[in-house]
Length: 203
Image (tube, rainbow, N blue to C red):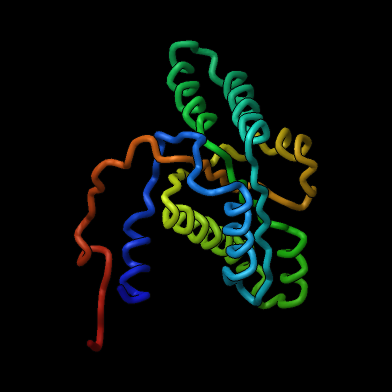
């Protein structure tokens, strides 16, 4: 199989997996190396390298979802309505770990000062860089048969996350990727017609 065929297969294999377990097919060290590779090699505008990542395993992983449950419980007063939320959070806790994605706003501000012509673009580019890190890590996890799904409970958990894990005040949380063993595969995926989503000229 060519590199291109392999890449296409991995892109197709990467799905949102919600039925997760804690029995990873590789060691935690291998997960850390996988994330480190993304940190080093995913591109960023002007090589700004504004993405920041925190990886949680074990009790730290569970603590994140305990924090999230506590915050949501303070917002959702209806117990019946909260039951579905708790079930979802319990599913996240059942996983093996969570990757938290941040952006370092001090880097963004420095880039804005260094290149004022593009000042309004650097926050957008920082988000795009973070998205590329998320996608690369998600696809890499899929390549070793580890399931994942992406969540966005920020900003309601930001303060507690920062204090619990001593996060730099300039780091802004923007996504949480839960990962673990695949206990149940994703269902079929529906696709809108490509010709409604893509145009080609000069072929």
